Image (cartoon, rainbow, N blue to C red; front, side, top):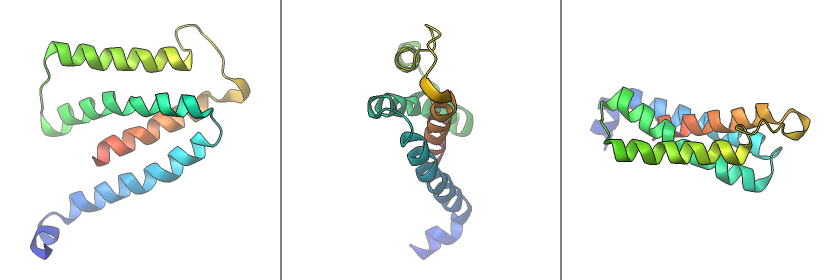
Amino acid sequence: FLAFVADFWVPLCLTGLCEGCFYPLVFAAAAKLPGGLVQVLNQSIVPYTVLFSVVLVGRSYESLQLLGVAVVLFGVLVAVGMPLGVDLQGGAWSDVLQCTGAYSLLAMGV
């Protein structure tokens, strides 16, 4: 175990840093958003995971898999109200962006 940690201490620290930043950011944003919306925003981790796996690991996806990711992303956008131009009360768009940004950190850590 110690040999593994000694060999891979940088990725382990970066993973811990990403997850350590995720929790305060997502809870701070979730406290200001409706609970149902937070659960939908949780699905934004899917496109981030695909993006980071392509960029960092070099993984490739089939077109049907990418279509599934696009459907998830479209569902998140519809739930938030972007296609209809709906304005969330009290300037909550920054909280939505903070919440989805936090999920990007979780995707990066995974």
